[in-house]
Length: 254
Image (cartoon, rainbow, N blue to C red):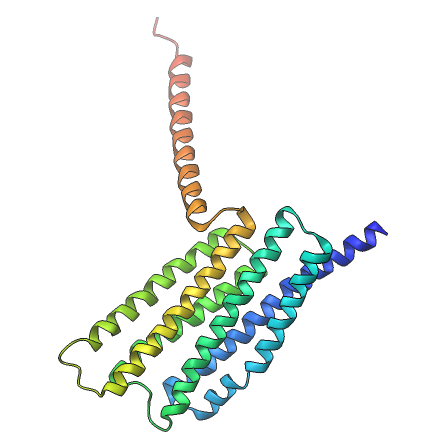
């Protein structure tokens, strides 16, 4: 009886983890179609993005039900509890990421058949779209194979998105801005949507760090630095010991 209950419990956890991957894939598809709509003025891509809202909500609700069942009926502890709690937060991050991607799709649909942003800025948005797509792929990878070290890499990608967002906001405030106020508002909002999407990828990475180590991202980074310093010190002492041992073994000349 106890064994069968334990098997059912593990199945619940595994199904929850699988649903997170499915939700991640759904969000990535929504963002891919939204970016396609923005960059290529594709009304079809915008509609494809927006039509995924019901599917995303269905997965979110299923994840919520699983979390309630696991917490209320199973009473997880230690790492299992961290997995459930982390997963609850990840679901919320994915839900917000889906909403942000759909904001981009709505902007592209609203301005169709025109571009939502000036042609001169399309290259910057293309780069932002590429970066968030890569971040989404890395996010999926750490869901499939939780790894704290890989999760830390997402912070570097987020820094690149932040730089692009800051640069475009700076351009909007320059006197040389040659486009309409409406275009300025669209650029500011769309850039912000990409920037916030990337932030949520970093949030998911932080949950994975906590899941695998029990530490926050900053605490884990500090621990890695201490471990690296300790390893360097140990290597130096080992080398000194080897050198002195070698000298001690040398016989003095007769």
